[in-house]
Figure (spheres, rainbow, N blue to C red):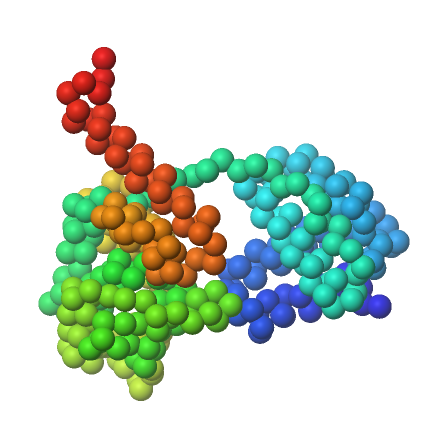
Length: 301
């Protein structure tokens, strides 16, 4: 029977090779499960076999985490990682039960997504200097993120073959290598054409198929795209933090504010559950309430 350390290593490998999760997500799983392993080792050798860990042990581990003053969100993530790990063990017949299945995770406060208003979004899009190849590339990136709502992890995986500019479509591989087709409008298409015709050749292409490349011809990373968005947000005079996910939130919020139905937005975002998409309805309601309070003559006392 495999030790819990061996089982964790096998689980992390499965996340990478079969579920195709991002390195960042796998790193989080590893960190959380390492804390579980450390706690197991502190309890004695009896618990080094996964089948020895029961519901009572899982409950004591949760109490141990709570004493370390983790936030509710962090606690919920750690318990979810353990639950997922033991679900894998049960499937592989290395454990008979999932001891974390009945562990209640802390109720999280609902955080409204950060998004940009139309004027802010326009300023951000206009921030790059499109007289250079790099500027054309950056404008195309901003336009594509806003036009499609794709994740930055999806954007960095795009190749030249994934574009269908004539049809206004992009093939995207999301979480778990799930493929979907996303749409883009005329502005994104126009700047992508300019980037491909003028901007990309000005960079050191190196025969690579990656859609967005650096000056050295290597594929851009998620971190480099995050840095360029932060830079252009400052250039545009936006006085708060803007990330690639802000543009995804902005895409969804603007669609719903304009009258799009929730199911369509769910499909475009690649959400598995409609409940994940519903958070944006709270954003639009908050915005409507703010507009009402500001402009209706009898809204305030």
